Length: 180
Image: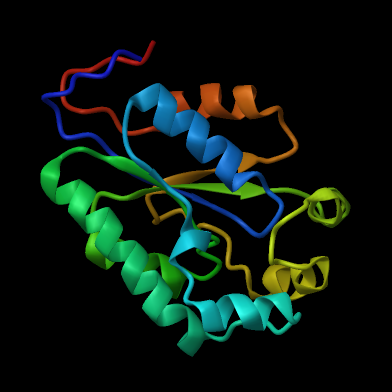
């Protein structure tokens, strides 16, 4: 896809539970689109990181200020027309609604994978605060992307480049642009 820098570029949330490869896909898409990238983990306050590091799941009250901060990031990119790609678990529809309230044109790419693959990926990560012990609570809280929500669901078991190719064809296009 050739990106027209004078067009309003999309704001994309790469969503899914821990271990789906959100960061890998989001970076690939941001590079391909030439738009800013943000890692949602960087927006967590220290208290939330400490809580998760200790194996304690976050509740909705813990997540709300974080989601609002992510929403502000999306809103800024939407307002300027620069677009952007951000990672976010966006486990529940109410969380996605918070992001959508900040940026009505947001597009969700929801990555899914089986428990064993996710547990294996999380177990192999180094330097990340999210322990494998919280995977089950994330899967229990997960509300899949509904048909009336803007976005698509992708199989995270696929290779990152394949996911990026598929995502590029699914993304909303600025007026007048054609996919590759």
